Image (cartoon, rainbow, N blue to C red; front, top):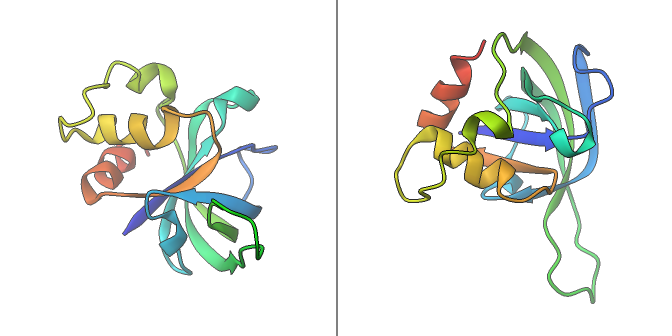
Length: 136
């Protein structure tokens, strides 16, 4: 399985990325060492969308706080960059793909990453991973 992460990124050309206590959704809590991950710089924080592809070098689940209802699973991640995006892909490019049941990879990316402004780690389908791979 492949994953995507939307996060605030200081240096989009960094060789490694580290994320502490990052929220997970849509199967993102299953991320593990060795998995492929596509890194999106959060546009709500001044980023430009898809920036890099990488491999998870460390993944650690964060324990839930006892007594707190409705907690999102969170993970600490380290990612080694394996590629820089050659083509732009952000909210503007996938915004028109809003027929949630159409099965298109662009729609999956829009739904999982851009429907909410939340930074998160998400699991993505093979079709969505292949679509993202075309941007490298």
